Image (cartoon, rainbow, N blue to C red; front, top):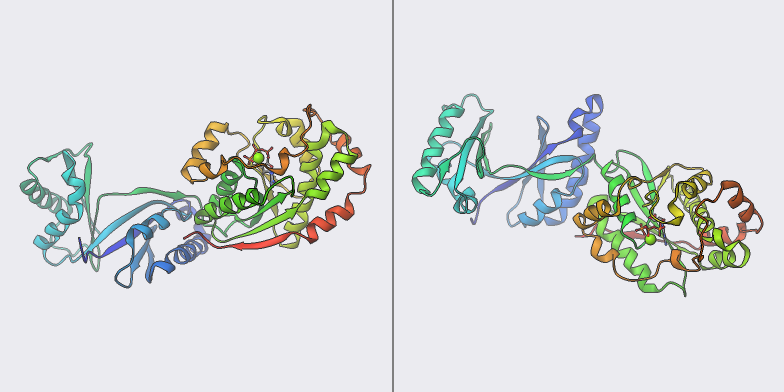
Length: 396
Ligand code: ATP
Ligand code: MG
């Protein structure tokens, strides 16, 4: 199928329900899509009737890649790649449809034709188009029969004002709403399975996500940090370019070890992590934190522990996987392709100095006292000051 001209059609999801704000959401979606597709070549964008059209404006664009990228941009519910055909000569149109849909028809037993006609001046009506094109295909593909209720392949033909589009239907797209339409938040990104999924989920709701990661060299290795950077990069096709903040956390952890009750280590550490994250978020104009916590998953994620860390935070903490089982989180991790990196066996600073018997029912008061008993402020200021910032470009 050399020289076939194709187009990507994206069906708006929630954007279409946005009333007066709709244009803002549509513009944000097209902006994000444009940024994703630009490295592949020039496209023109138009929108009409809840559909966004991305049409190549030059030859030689890697269309498989363009389609795959477009499927990851939040804001569309369905995506479809279609052939742009001339509509003037109906026989030619039939031949085009057969050629374009041929690979799928070859392995099918049943099919149907579905026709839409937004150009009402077109001389044939939809039922006639279906009958004619259906007959044309049957004649040339004798192994096929028509099944109008549950066809294995649907050959869609849409007669538009300028051209006709031929395609075999929609694929699911990324869903959600466009990144950048819901404010900014800072994701506490570990090397585990849960937090990349949490970041993905908030980006899906339109949040512009940055990531913060805590390292404790020499207890944690450089390779552990690099693993987290790779995870961050892995979610950029969904989140867009990301800022990645890396916090040197060793001295704080050693201070906790040397000065706090052992059974409270983990919760105290979590509270101090949050304190630093908030300082950076505030400085950068972000409004909330995101974690990959799920209630009851481990000792630091009991209801009581979560209440403690929450009470320590001036900012809302979003925990999008809070009610999900590990197995459910894993399904998403596989879908966004972070799972294989997440299970690489590098140590996280959370596993350094872990207490043998962590307190599963800490109280905010107990934590507050433990933290107040030592002057963490200079260490917090130093860690915030020495946090490294790196711009992670979208993974192409
Ligand atoms: P994950 O799979 O996301 O690592 P987890 O099940 O391992 O989660 P914890 O290690 O208890 O759970 O961490 C809970 C949350 O705390 C993580 O989801 C993440 O948001 C944050 N967190 C943990 N360690 C770090 C770290 N080193 N840097 C940044 N955030 C972290
Ligand atoms: Mg972890």
